[in-house]
Amino acid sequence: MTTNEGKGKTVVVGLSGGVNSSVAALLLKQQGWNVTGLFMKNWEDDDDDEYCSSRQDLIDVMSVADTIGIDVEVVNFAKEYRERVFSIFLEEYRAGRTPNPDVLCNSEIKFKAFLDHALRMGADRIATGHYAGVRESNAGDGRFQLLKAEDGTKDQSYFLHRLDQRQLSKTLFPLADLYKRDVRRMAEEAGLHVAVKKDSTGICFIGERPFKEFLMRYLPPKKGEIRCLDDGRLLGEHDGLTYHTLGQRKGLQIGGVKGGKGSATGEHEAWFVAGKDMARNILYVVQGHDHPALLADELTADQLSWISGEPPHTHWVYGAKTRYRQADAPCEIESVDAGGCRIRFAEPQWAVTPGQSVVVYESRVCLGGGVIR
Image (cartoon, rainbow, N blue to C red):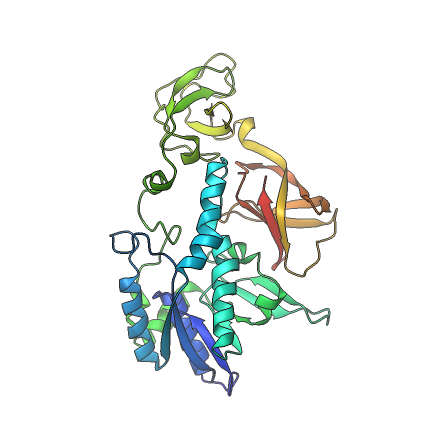
């Protein structure tokens, strides 16, 4: 349905070549906004290979723009991406942690470099195809809140938790109340060929390629021992601690080794990464998905980012995620200071991984979060 909600106002929509951002632009055009599309080129190192080519995405963007009837600008943020996202990504892996570059990409590129560029273009707002919502607070304090999307299976607020008040005040999420099936239907009805385009998966600069293969380009192998955490037995050899993450099961190549004396689990259960000794270059593993070494009832986090500008109350009951595909786990924030925060969970959480984000919610409202240490 066409409305005049955006009449006389300009919005720049980040177009990726996928169905989500395409329908976001379509909806805003129907609402009366003066819509311009912007295609961001964020990676150049190997953009001509089979895994990470943006050429087809740009072709799709131009086709969608022509069908909708909007102009498109192409902008290169590769320098900003390398400095603000990829360099930190590598630094974290070198330190033995497992970072989440999509969180950084959103806060530093899609809602900073992109936002600043769009404002210079004269935009009143920017928009993306993220599944999330934004609204003004009911408290009447002029603050904005980040909300979970209506489609809980697609909600992306976890990746957006570092956005601040300035960024949210200038952002529209047209897909907030839509389900993915409806987005594809709208695209099909509008004649957009991307209606059936496969969703992109994985980290944007890695694409569909094997993750270890990509890391080896930048972080050379450094072989070391794999030992059982329970009894210290030597089980095998790893290529480098940087290639492994807490809770990892595949790729250890020690599947045939039985559990030893004192093993907390059955003899033939799978092995999981349980820890890293960076100084001695040892990878520690345990048997069994529910081994105690893989469970934690509390965590500490730093690099805190609270959307309202202020930390949540301590000792209130909240929900939190320590990974994207996870239900909110009841918790309380025990302390918050300049150095970080401590969060205690009602039930132990599995494979709480240093470098990943912990994101705190109060019902549908995303409060922010930090980096697990």
